Length: 193
Image (cartoon, rainbow, N blue to C red; front, side, top):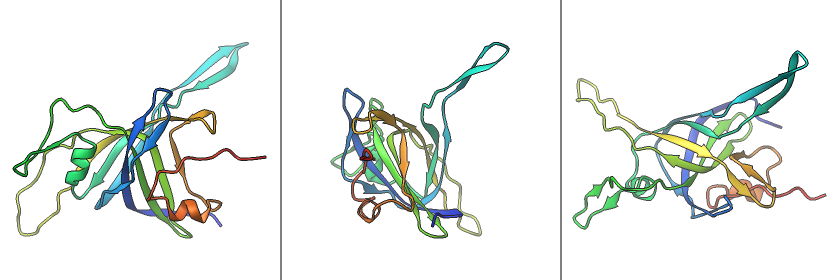
């Protein structure tokens, strides 16, 4: 039975990606990014209608992925070095490298559901730097969060002979894929038959 609702973001992971010349990807082992607060990724792309014979004769749709924000309690030093290109100094400082190149990664996460959690993976992401912001302590302590902007685009999957942006589990997902979802990035396979 499928979920009727979703709620509760948790289990955010990232896996560093190596993008090949053909657009395919291989991934390192996923790493947990604890303290997930929210994620909001909006579809990117355009719809282009073509008119002929006084009607909308054809419509082209371009899927250029997603863009939006991932908010966490605090970015880990591992995320800063692995994804944002920070450098760890011998004296314990973690420094932002002004010349760092974007690091591609898969972003994995789940939403709880009324039946079973749905697990998601965005296959080719990059992240912006987080802003430096905070407030003074007053009568109450209010935790401050950190937000990075995520841009998710496609990878090429030879088994499917197409480009894909994301995937998610559902009621027909095998237990092997579902249970191992956060231990390795899984690509969809071609349906035989």
